[in-house]
Image (cartoon, rainbow, N blue to C red; front, side, top):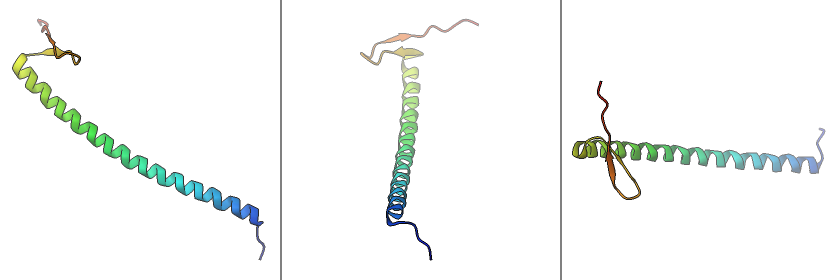
Length: 78
């Protein structure tokens, strides 16, 4: 049976190990991405609910996130 050299085999094994490590890391990143997207959607939903509460209390407003001040949004006549 013919064989490649020990050096060639070592190179192939190292490359395969690096590929497997990268695939593992990519899997971890995808899992983190999924978790972050879920967390983002949850916060977005909470913020939308708060916006409805604020609109019920103050009407349509633009809030300054720096100091909490707000301006009333003038509604256009049709």
